[in-house]
Picture (cartoon, one colour):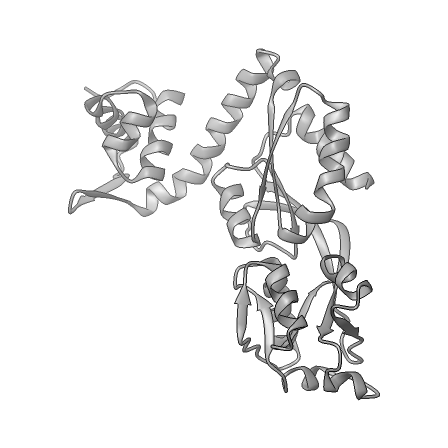
Length: 295
């Protein structure tokens, strides 16, 4: 029997099935029976006259129609839930989900969260610190409300605005041959083993794009998710590295590593506040955004 309309219940079921690619697991997460979930998907398909999932080898594969519907459905659900929270005065006792890339999570985010919690003592701040690629996926899947990232996240579904900046610096071990040169340029860097953050990190993306713009390709001998692992490797003379100044300033001050100016490179980069364009900005989230802007 054809339903007369599609409800928020149908849309919530669709989102769970899309994310899990499995009727049984979606039913378990929704505390529903498997036939009820299947029926809801069939009702949506019948109502709109489309196929949302293809069933092959006991696994669901979303169609292109489902892919297009998902982004809209996700934020319809988010908007409905936000409305529900507002009506229940949830904003005074809610949860703010904040993501940050490694550098910003280490230096910029702690004082921001501390100040925010003083101003909003009943709001719980859940923090995820990860690389830019992971933060982008979580924003698109509505697993984060906002993220603070180094470098641009290139997705038309995300709102991005500048709010801060820093710079990358070259670090070498004490006694390194580059320290005896009068000037260091980009070509000099490629003569030595390069130790860099992993692909997908904001810092690595920035360096890849910067060197590519100068007709050069980076081929690091070490890649790591840990900045401190790279700094330690530099101190042992394994190679040289390009890292955010804030993360290595203490090691430079302590004499563990040395830094050199690159004459033909300006490695200043922007930091951004990012949230989904369809995100409902409740008062807590707006307050956090304004706090970041003023800092």
